[in-house]
Image (tube, rainbow, N blue to C red; front, top):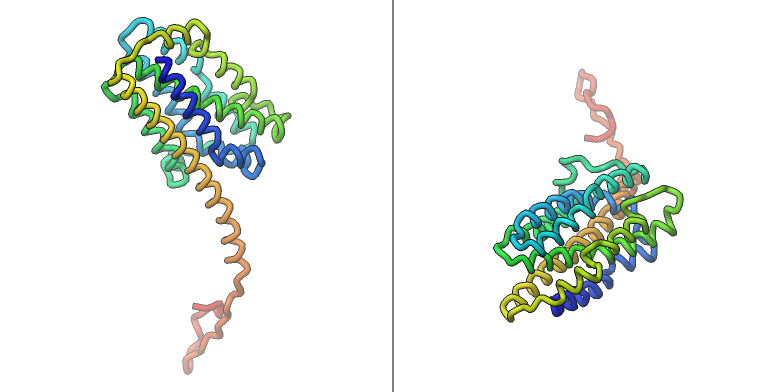
Length: 253
């Protein structure tokens, strides 16, 4: 699987160039504004790991998946604790299934769909490599943002401490890496895994494209509201009919 791990690294490098991370570094977007729109993915991720693990047959591969799931268990609670620390109200179920969350939701469905495909154990481990590689980019950039913009808020999910846990996963230990690198893949298997990696990173790009679009729409909305308030109200005088009082308010029909 050495060819696949190198392919994942290449995709990871390209993902790191996404405009979202440049905006985050330039602090033109704020954690408290985009974090709620990640809620659906944060919750989906836990089920994805569990279902993926349950469908692995080989002992070696299953052992890797079990350790990985346990290492990530409970991190969703950190996420919602951080929202509270940021004074951000967690989205309701109705909101999570609303339009502003569409990109995150659909990308999450795309990634979850991978675990239901009839695929090999190697493909299921490659899926974990994709998730973690994309996660390393996100957590490294957001942790730097938190250190600069939210140093005293005691965040956990978005912190450097979480990043250190992610990079210290068993999946990236030398023994596990050596085991994966030693696996020989036939041409057809290599093509299968390459297509999986492509689909995963397409989903992540779509998710973060959607986050940027959603944030841009939310920036424009208040400005439009202000313009509406400043628009002068046209006042019409009500005409009274002969012999009866007007039933209009005088504020315009």
